[in-house]
Image (cartoon, rainbow, N blue to C red; front, side, top):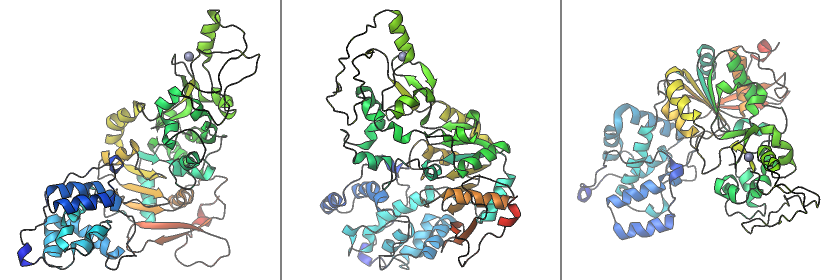
Length: 493
Ligand SMILES: [Zn+2]
């Protein structure tokens, strides 16, 4: 809707607005609460700060098909590209000031759902929100225009020598390791229904809670303990990059330490949240290989420090006595599982420290090597970035990609696309399938028991995108529409 005469003082304010680059840090404001406050104040700078609070909540990752007047995928891609090309001021002149398109509709091109409380209001009421959406879009790295196809990705793999690979839970889910944050199958949702005396599932990984009552962590630890020496095709792919001398660093969010099973060397791996590879005494700091406490973890027994025990023994103050350990912990919580050994003839080691796997809990510092490696080593050397199986919402991995030079090509491999980072090539699907296909196209033989010898992969270009490819596997014998890899036979031994 064009701006009418009596509203000419209303202009799009194109000064950069402060947009929090870490949406996870937001305290979401309830829409109803916001509506009340908006009605009280009308147009003012305060309105804008309120919009800043809600823009992430209004952001969606797919076209708004339920809305009557929303941009199509094609329109969205066109508007986003044009914003980068002509800048925000010209962009607004051409589209909004001219009345060619409403600010309300333009919001949808940038993934923002027009809020219900503005419904029916004049279009200028949407301007502040549009400015925020444009600012957010412009703060993203611009996609490199010359990398688009799956074969471009394979070419990049072949030519790159210092690849940074960033991995998340998505590369271990095919092994049955739960994704903590997934709503349906995740550990957190399991915990929410577990009957444990915790308010928030994240408390399981809170260091204060652990110190107060380690039984909570050890009653679920066996569920996230790596079971065996298995690893996924995606782990094998990363190991293959390493063995070809192409892996600069694998930044992993995973604590399962499955990278080691695949042969990824410790000097190539930064486990951003620590891992089960080692465990440390919470009292004396004594460190042991992680598997030294696996038996206790599997039996839901709290592992105690052998060094502390030995020290206590040598002091001669350990006495054989009837156990008087209470089943009730000091916090008064009653653990679901009875972790304390109540065998009458057991030694009681009240002073021996508890062994904690060296995974980084909330409230603990990140491993030092993370920032050192990124700042002093990788930033100057990296020539390709591949992100696999993570939505990059959680620090510190969320900080890695924006920190690397923007002219370095970036490839994204995951089941679900993300919108807060512009990658050059999005390969959407089961990451094990995607990496297998990439290897075929790169001319590399990636063999793994989970990759069928006759695997056929169907790749569709997502409508409206030049560089977003949807991967699926084709059942043998089924009819195929769309381009299917014809290189399967060539690359098989
Ligand atoms: Zn100790």
